Image (cartoon, rainbow, N blue to C red; front, side):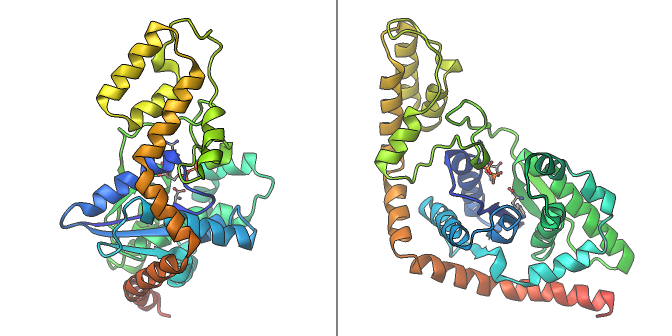
Length: 323
Ligand code: ADP
Ligand code: TRP
């Protein structure tokens, strides 16, 4: 039996890359018998970049709705919003005082973000410590994350070990990252990694018209309609093959290679595939977003399950530190 925990930032709506790369794998893991799973929306982390309160609320709902619509079972997973369990921010302070400044200054993600963003705030710098608190608060053993989070997990382990060594007690469980190397990076409409920050997403929960517009904006080469095309270098085909049956994939690949298939037709087929594969999830998403009370209730129940565990950990920390 392993305790698994992961968080997802609510810095925008969840796109196809998030669904295939994070949401579906985490849901499968939570369904493995014997696993004890915690999944939370990292809304405090999103404050490092999102400052608008209306956007914050919308992003929280859209993120929660994406997880619930994708099949997350809240009777099997403790599902909560990070900001609802405030013990996390108290633990962040204690951990801050055991975190060497140069470790944070050398973090890749901080360096990347501070090069790109106009607003370089201290929250951005302290981001990994809040993440360590998320994990250590719940005695998590396995933390499924993307490759980009590997360094954050190493920092969490270093901070926890330094703390345990200092107080001479095993206050924290040392967690392990579970990095799924086989999950590919899903390309966005411009062919680069799909990401909220690149504005190249396919948002499968959008109304059909807006989703069509995103699909139609996928960048292709200029091969004329009648010429044979290489499916392996085409974003439309890559996205199609991630969702199709093997037969549908072979059929489309053959039509690419034969010539006479226009990219417009391939885009329409991709749209139809998304609409059919995600038909039920899209309906559930709309229902949840139309009346957000079900989301609020799910998050209240989740926080009530999470809080006693967080309080127990914080009790151990306070007592070890003499508070
Ligand atoms: P974004 O780049 O859109 O801001 P995040 O960095 O918040 O996405 O990532 C949330 C989760 O989704 C992470 O586990 C990450 O590995 C996964 N993920 C994000 N984009 C992709 C993608 N294009 N392909 C596969 N997985 C992705
Ligand atoms: N930083 C993670 C990301 O951007 C989100 C996150 C916050 C997280 N706290 C966490 C992931 C704790 C795992 C465990 O993807």
